[in-house]
Image (cartoon, rainbow, N blue to C red; front, side, top):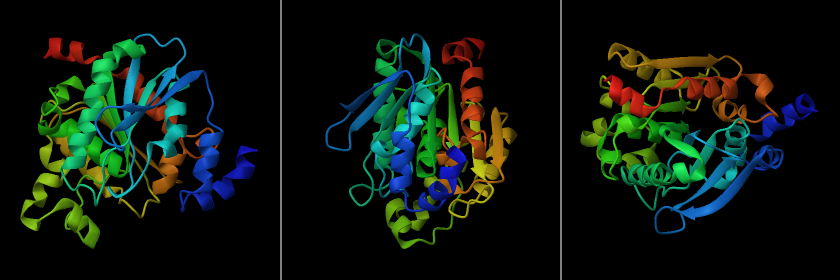
Length: 288
């Protein structure tokens, strides 16, 4: 049945319409969902929590979705939260403000606020605050990378990148200058300030461990973004794992998190393996 549905899902994912609804409708597992928890004022300041039944000291993942910093909704990514929660991981998926309501760097401060809320409440949710992981796809992977690499955003909410056990970037734009798209020029501001918008420019020794993945058929965000950031992290002595999936394009990379499309590539098992191998941040601090 999964392989029968696959061609229709593959065609339909280009529109992010009913195929996403199918992925979400078929998401299942032993978990509980709490929706629309406020972490900040306003309609975009809410998050959904996917909590495994009986969670205790579980890893906690904050998943940041993409949408070119213009759109997206946490409701679209139930299948991601379900996939993580079904494997014993607490998943938190926040909305955040996007263009034209806000521009860079406001959406990063929104994401930092969601991370801080999660860190404060992780223990009461059954999670381990010292195993807090940032994860994102596309523009969300960019957001996760910026929070993990440039300390200014987490410091604004009383945290530090050292409080993050690791980050996962799926098809992220990390080194994408010069800007060609007129909307992105509005999102990221004056050309003489664009260097501060690029995650690759904030790599330093001691960054959280990273798992970076890309689909080799991706024509939306070139895989060279992943290759360049990984190379920069390695040059700084930071821990980084990479995966490149020959059969996946931009949307299928996140779609493969669903059981309906998991046969295309082991995206979910690879992410789970990375999360489970991470050392708690307090052990990292003690070892430093």
